[in-house]
Length: 167
Image (cartoon, helix red, strand yellow):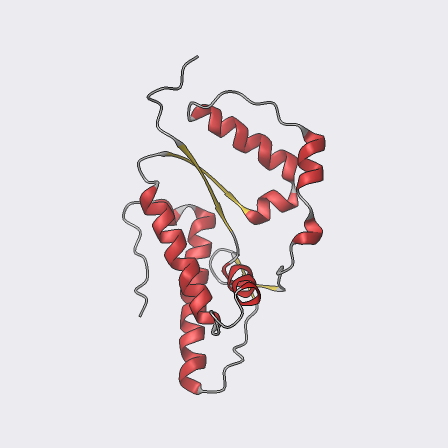
């Protein structure tokens, strides 16, 4: 079977925005001082990734799905990638179970339920001292979680999806 001329497949993996923002803060000390900046980067990255992959065969998963049941999720991904035109691959359960390590999920945060059909969001309390700064963080947090819930439901992948404006 030849794959020349087959458009590339995209494996789109999304993660909880607060986990990403917290991880960025911890890794890039001093460069992302405000949590809102990490959340804005998360929004920008996901919006760009969706836009740039919209005409490609896209397989969607989440960090949460991979960590919860790596073998089942990787089996599903392999089947969907085959539909995209990639060769059939046998999923090696032992290698996957060894590779995916739950204990390396450093920024797994306590969750609380949002009203968006049971979509789960990380609990959040701003540590900023100014009211203006706290309000901005809370607004960005709400926007990021709306997108996160829309990624989970699939709505964010629709061509008519309305992304929030970031200032």
